[in-house]
Length: 148
View 1 (cartoon, rainbow, N blue to C red):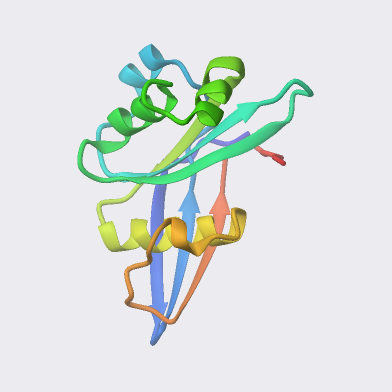
View 2 (view 1 turned 60 degrees about the horizontal axis):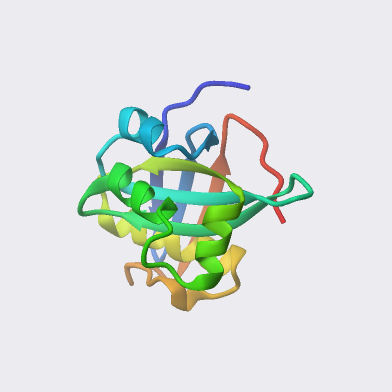
Protein backbone atom coordinates (compact mmCIF):
# COMPACT_ATOMS: atom_id res chain seq x y z
CA UNK A 1 0.00 0.00 0.00
CA UNK A 2 1.30 3.46 -0.84
CA UNK A 3 0.40 6.86 0.55
CA UNK A 4 -1.06 9.45 -1.79
CA UNK A 5 -2.71 12.75 -1.13
CA UNK A 6 -6.30 12.70 -2.35
CA UNK A 7 -6.81 15.05 -5.29
CA UNK A 8 -8.08 15.30 -8.86
CA UNK A 9 -5.80 16.14 -11.79
CA UNK A 10 -7.24 17.47 -15.02
CA UNK A 11 -6.16 17.81 -18.64
CA UNK A 12 -8.21 18.59 -21.72
CA UNK A 13 -7.88 18.28 -25.46
CA UNK A 14 -10.52 20.26 -27.34
CA UNK A 15 -13.85 18.64 -26.33
CA UNK A 16 -12.38 15.81 -24.25
CA UNK A 17 -11.53 15.86 -20.54
CA UNK A 18 -9.03 13.51 -18.90
CA UNK A 19 -9.20 13.24 -15.13
CA UNK A 20 -6.87 11.38 -12.80
CA UNK A 21 -8.66 10.65 -9.54
CA UNK A 22 -6.49 9.96 -6.49
CA UNK A 23 -8.54 8.49 -3.63
CA UNK A 24 -7.80 8.55 0.08
CA UNK A 25 -7.37 5.24 1.84
CA UNK A 26 -10.62 3.36 2.50
CA UNK A 27 -11.62 3.90 6.14
CA UNK A 28 -14.27 2.42 8.39
CA UNK A 29 -17.02 5.01 8.81
CA UNK A 30 -17.19 6.35 12.33
CA UNK A 31 -18.64 9.82 12.90
CA UNK A 32 -15.97 10.70 15.46
CA UNK A 33 -13.09 9.61 13.23
CA UNK A 34 -14.65 11.48 10.31
CA UNK A 35 -14.81 14.63 12.44
CA UNK A 36 -11.11 14.47 13.23
CA UNK A 37 -9.66 13.12 9.98
CA UNK A 38 -11.76 14.22 7.00
CA UNK A 39 -11.13 17.77 5.79
CA UNK A 40 -13.99 20.23 5.51
CA UNK A 41 -13.27 21.14 1.90
CA UNK A 42 -14.95 20.44 -1.44
CA UNK A 43 -14.50 17.09 -3.12
CA UNK A 44 -16.00 13.76 -4.02
CA UNK A 45 -16.61 10.66 -1.90
CA UNK A 46 -17.84 7.08 -2.00
CA UNK A 47 -19.64 5.15 0.72
CA UNK A 48 -19.57 1.36 0.86
CA UNK A 49 -21.21 -1.21 3.11
CA UNK A 50 -19.83 -4.64 3.94
CA UNK A 51 -22.49 -7.33 3.53
CA UNK A 52 -22.85 -10.59 5.48
CA UNK A 53 -20.42 -12.33 3.08
CA UNK A 54 -17.78 -9.64 3.83
CA UNK A 55 -18.10 -8.13 0.35
CA UNK A 56 -17.98 -4.39 -0.20
CA UNK A 57 -21.01 -2.90 -1.93
CA UNK A 58 -20.87 0.62 -3.33
CA UNK A 59 -23.76 2.52 -1.79
CA UNK A 60 -23.15 6.08 -2.95
CA UNK A 61 -20.90 8.32 -5.02
CA UNK A 62 -21.50 11.99 -4.30
CA UNK A 63 -20.06 15.48 -4.49
CA UNK A 64 -19.45 17.69 -1.50
CA UNK A 65 -19.34 21.41 -2.08
CA UNK A 66 -20.97 23.68 0.46
CA UNK A 67 -20.29 22.29 3.92
CA UNK A 68 -17.44 20.16 2.66
CA UNK A 69 -16.56 16.49 2.76
CA UNK A 70 -16.62 16.14 6.54
CA UNK A 71 -20.22 17.25 7.04
CA UNK A 72 -21.51 15.54 3.90
CA UNK A 73 -20.01 12.13 4.74
CA UNK A 74 -21.26 12.38 8.32
CA UNK A 75 -24.73 13.23 7.05
CA UNK A 76 -24.76 10.36 4.55
CA UNK A 77 -23.86 7.71 7.15
CA UNK A 78 -26.56 8.97 9.54
CA UNK A 79 -29.76 6.93 9.12
CA UNK A 80 -32.08 9.79 10.13
CA UNK A 81 -34.32 10.91 7.29
CA UNK A 82 -33.27 8.15 4.89
CA UNK A 83 -35.56 5.76 3.01
CA UNK A 84 -36.35 2.48 4.78
CA UNK A 85 -34.08 0.52 2.42
CA UNK A 86 -31.08 2.81 2.96
CA UNK A 87 -31.81 3.13 6.68
CA UNK A 88 -31.67 -0.67 7.06
CA UNK A 89 -28.30 -0.82 5.30
CA UNK A 90 -26.85 2.02 7.39
CA UNK A 91 -28.03 0.47 10.66
CA UNK A 92 -27.18 -3.17 9.83
CA UNK A 93 -23.82 -3.22 8.07
CA UNK A 94 -20.34 -1.84 8.61
CA UNK A 95 -19.79 1.26 6.50
CA UNK A 96 -16.63 2.48 4.77
CA UNK A 97 -15.75 5.65 2.91
CA UNK A 98 -13.03 7.23 0.82
CA UNK A 99 -12.73 10.69 -0.65
CA UNK A 100 -10.80 12.97 -2.92
CA UNK A 101 -10.37 16.74 -2.84
CA UNK A 102 -10.86 19.34 -5.56
CA UNK A 103 -11.40 23.11 -5.48
CA UNK A 104 -13.09 22.98 -8.91
CA UNK A 105 -16.85 22.45 -8.82
CA UNK A 106 -16.88 21.73 -12.56
CA UNK A 107 -14.27 18.99 -12.16
CA UNK A 108 -16.20 17.47 -9.24
CA UNK A 109 -19.40 17.47 -11.33
CA UNK A 110 -17.67 15.85 -14.32
CA UNK A 111 -16.06 13.08 -12.26
CA UNK A 112 -19.23 12.41 -10.19
CA UNK A 113 -21.25 12.14 -13.40
CA UNK A 114 -18.72 9.74 -14.95
CA UNK A 115 -18.59 7.50 -11.86
CA UNK A 116 -22.38 7.38 -11.49
CA UNK A 117 -22.76 6.57 -15.19
CA UNK A 118 -20.07 3.88 -14.96
CA UNK A 119 -20.91 2.24 -11.64
CA UNK A 120 -24.68 2.66 -11.44
CA UNK A 121 -25.42 2.89 -15.19
CA UNK A 122 -27.41 6.01 -14.40
CA UNK A 123 -26.07 9.33 -15.61
CA UNK A 124 -29.20 11.07 -14.34
CA UNK A 125 -27.98 10.78 -10.72
CA UNK A 126 -25.75 13.79 -11.37
CA UNK A 127 -24.97 16.25 -14.15
CA UNK A 128 -21.61 16.99 -15.73
CA UNK A 129 -20.37 20.54 -16.22
CA UNK A 130 -21.31 20.66 -19.90
CA UNK A 131 -17.81 21.80 -20.89
CA UNK A 132 -16.83 18.59 -22.72
CA UNK A 133 -18.36 16.08 -25.12
CA UNK A 134 -16.29 13.19 -23.75
CA UNK A 135 -15.02 12.57 -20.22
CA UNK A 136 -12.48 9.96 -19.13
CA UNK A 137 -11.50 9.17 -15.55
CA UNK A 138 -8.62 7.02 -14.34
CA UNK A 139 -8.67 6.07 -10.65
CA UNK A 140 -5.73 5.58 -8.31
CA UNK A 141 -6.07 4.31 -4.74
CA UNK A 142 -3.63 3.30 -2.01
CA UNK A 143 -5.60 0.10 -1.41
CA UNK A 144 -7.25 -2.36 -3.77
CA UNK A 145 -11.00 -2.41 -3.48
CA UNK A 146 -13.17 -5.10 -4.96
CA UNK A 147 -16.84 -4.42 -4.65
CA UNK A 148 -20.01 -5.92 -6.05
